[in-house]
Image 1 (cartoon, rainbow, N blue to C red):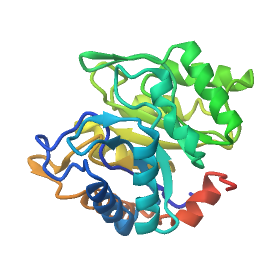
Image 2: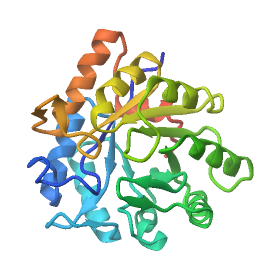
Image 3: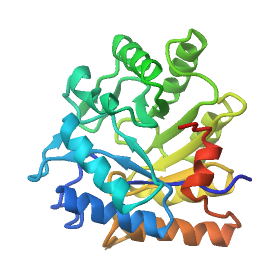
Amino acid sequence: MEKLIITAAICGAEVTKEHNPAVPYTVEEMVREAKSAFEAGAAVIHVHVRWDDGTPTQDKERFRVVLDAIKEACPGVILIPSTGGATGMTPEERLQPTELFPEMATLDCGTCNFGDDIFVNDMPTMRAFGKRMLENNIKPEYECFEIGHLDTVLNMAAKGLVPAAPMQFNFVLGVNGCTPATLGNLDYLVNKIPAGSTWTVTGVGRGAWPMAAAGIVMGGNVRVGFEDNIYLERGHKAASNGELVAKVVALAKLLGREIATPDEARKILSLTK
């Protein structure tokens, strides 16, 4: 097996300080949480940004400030800004961080229920996002919340509408209203991806730790962080994103996987920048 790439999704767009006081909003808090995850073993930081009051934003300049500050605090780390933003944002809003030419960014692979909301990623939106990433030489991380999302993006790749091989997938399982976080669902998705692809699994809420263990054993990669789960264990909230990453490192050690550094992760992910 390749070494394990750990991604930390440090804040997301929905979780708040009311859920866990350690959820970061300000630039300084974002740096604190990114650094805690990086020092614990994360090679990748997945970045949403907020205004200081916690309101989600896709503002390009806010992204610029946050990304630059994290790069300075975490030398060499791979940053994956979100183009998902928050439900209700327009495609134009969501695309703003791609104007900063990051080496990677997320690309959501279809519309789905998202709790009480609808996360809209229709075909025109996906084509526009694919075109932007092709033009700006950005490697997408393909976010699949539903099993059908994978077929959708593979068909787009075959038509040249999104960057193709080698592809990196993130299977986000357990969102309320989307594909459940089960071993059977993960196994189905992993066995459908093209040869030479890489994949990460994200378990949401109570699915976080079973999916982390599955990702380690199955030879994939793992994402944890406050965006997806605020608990270190049942009834015990994590004090930082670093604590969540450290638990993945401990699980990997028990299960025989070494942890990838950012440089090793770049080779595994076929990043050329």
